[in-house]
Structure formats: structure tokens, C-alpha cells
Image (cartoon, rainbow, N blue to C red; front, side):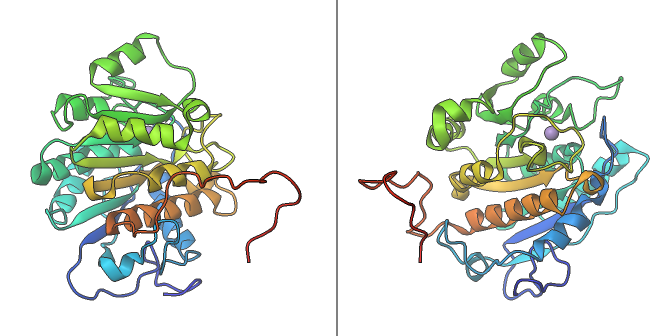
Amino acid sequence: MTEGGGMGTADGRDGIRGPVSGTEVPRPFDGGTSFRPGARFGPAAVRQASRNLRPAYHPDLDVAPYRRVQVVDAGDVPCDPFSIDEALEQIDRHAAGLVSDRHRLITVGGDHTVALPLLRAVNRVHGPVALVHFDAHLDTWDTYFGASRTHGTVFRRAFEEGLLVEDHSIHVGIRGPLYDEQDLADDAAFGFQVIRAGDLDLLGVEGVLDRIRTRVGDAPVYLSVDIDVLDPAFAPGTGTPEMGGFTSRELLRLLRGLPGDSLVGADVVEVSPAYDHAEVTSLAAATVVYDVTALMAGPGPKARTAAPAVPAGAGEGPVTPPD
Ligand SMILES: [Mn+2]
């Protein structure tokens, strides 16, 4: 599939050859959103933005992902727009029919509430997972306006349901003010470690990756990417934007260093196209989906995630562009 083509699938793929080993499933659901609505329209926007991708070869991961794995866009899950509980059941049922020990799911949301039924479905195959959660927000609050299943409470519910391996999960990119100082203590009590957005400045990409890898250990990993982990400059089209986030380059470098072999599922959520400009947010999400696909396919021998060594004399004289 070439740039500009595609049949509206999440990554421009137009056919299935051989056994399917990965599936991308959009969830047009935003009934759990607390502020700006509209993430139900995210999947369509991410599909459209994905037409800009050149998916054949991923130079940073040194892999031609679609020569190694088969990927299919499994279409949208019909979601009840009025009943959150019914929508979560529908997502769970649909995911359960797609996930197996050979088939991994990458979901395009939808608001972050969709991660709860996805974790339930993944748990039935793999057991509890280590959650690597990229987000501006903890999403471990108890209730919003008395509601317990929302996009801001999803990972407290996952903890309570025993869906996470104890003390192996980590939030990355957290920032912004909280409702209460106790929020952080509660979150730690649920077994989460936190890497705040500003920690990236101190630790660097490799330092953050070391912490993530150490945290998840050998556990199966579920990756959840809330697009608001990016700064609003890089992802304005989202429901609860927060200043001081990662650049898209930083996010991609972090994702590319994750342990792809351990990844049993992933979601990319909270793209809300009505607040987007020039598809910048949906392109970011489409690229994240592609990168996670490539990561699951398995990086090749030339893949590098560390910063290249600075050659002697660098910084002196003009920068020469590559050939
Ligand atoms: Mn979130």
C-alpha cells in the first residue's frame, strides 16, 4: 500500500494474506468523557490520517512489519451511546472474539473507558498484565459525579478487578494539578509507579526506558496510550488537554524502546477530531498505532533506541544534512 492510497483501514492495509496475527479495532465510544466530548469520532479520523503513512519499512525499528505479521482492521465496534455498562459489555464481547495467544489487539479509541473491557478480554487469555500507561492523567480516581466507570477511573477499576500484576504497572507522562494530594498516595497504593512528564528532562529517554523495563520485568505488558500524553501543541484534538507534555518525537522514541515481545495488547485513545487542526492529533495517533504494530512485529538487528553517540567534532561548524 502506498502513501495516499488505502481503503480506509487503520494503517492503509487493503488485504489479508495468511494467518492474522494482529488486529486493529476502533471503538467509537466517548460516553465516559468528563470534559470535551467527541472521541467517538477518533477512529474515523485516525483511519483518514493513516493514509499519509508509508508502512512498508520502519527504519528506526529496522523491520518491515507487514512482511512479518498479518494485520487486519476489524472494523468499528457498535457501542451503545446511552449505557456505559452496555457499551463496555459490547467492547468486551467483541475483543474476546479477537484476542488469543497468537492474536494481539491494538485498539483505536474512543475515550479511555474502553481500556477496562479490553483489559478484561486480554486477562482471560494472558492473566494479569503489567500496564504501561502513557497519559497526562493518572486515571485512577474513584468516581466522577458518582459514576464509577469513566475515562478517569478506568485503572482503579482494573486494579480492583485484579487485572494488573501487582506492583508492575507504571504511568508515564503524568502532569498537571490534582483534585487532592491524596490522589498520588492512592495511586501508589494501587501499585503504580509514576514517571512525570518533567522527569524525561532529567532522566532522558534511556533513563525512562530503564525504569519502565525494570518495572514491568518479565510480565506480559498491556500498553495504553492516551494521546493527551502529548503536549497540546502536538495533540490539540483531545478531551482533556494538559500543558507541558511530551513532543511527538519523544513519545515515539519512548514507544520504540518498549519490550515488543512482551506486548500482549495496546490501545490508543482520546483523539477528539473536533478540536484538532490539520489532522495533527489523528496523525500522531495513526503513527503510534503503526509504531506499536512494528514493535509487536519485532525490531530488526539494526534497531536502536539509544541516542547515537555524538561524533568527535560535533557541534563545531555547520550541520551537514544526510544524503
Ligand atoms: Mn486517560
